[in-house]
Picture 1: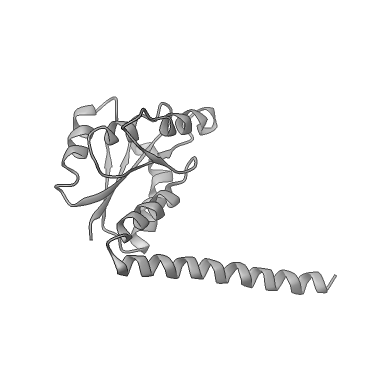
Picture 2: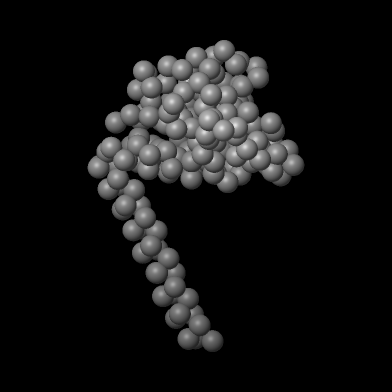
Length: 164
C-alpha cells in the first residue's frame, strides 16, 4: 500500500492534524508526519513533494493556517493528489479556506472544511483504496458502522418521544 503524508506548516498545527494521523492509523494506512513551511522552508517542502511518488507516497495532506499556501506549494511540485486542510489560525479560518480552494488552473488542491483533518485522512484513504480492496473494505465497514449507529440513535429517540 502506498503511504500518506501529513505535512503541517508549523508544529502548532499538530493539535488539529493529529486527527488525520489517528484516522490513518485506525485504518492501518502507513503515513509520515512532517513540518515544512511554504515560506520558511520552501526548498524542503518542494523537495519532499517532488520525491513523494518515488518515496512511496500516494497522497499528501497539507494543513496550514493564515495564508495557507502549503497545499498549493506542494501541489505545484507533484502530480500526486494533495488535500488541503485549512486551519483556523485567523479570521475564523476563512482566510485559510479561501486560500486553499482558490488555486490557479493547473494546480489542483482538494480541500476539506476548516480544521477537517479527519475528513482529509478519510479522503486520502479513499484515494488509496482505489487500488487496495482491503482498505476499501475497511472504509465500507466504517460507513456501515456509522449508518447503524444513526439508526440506533433514531430508535432510542422514537422510544423517548413515545414516553412524552
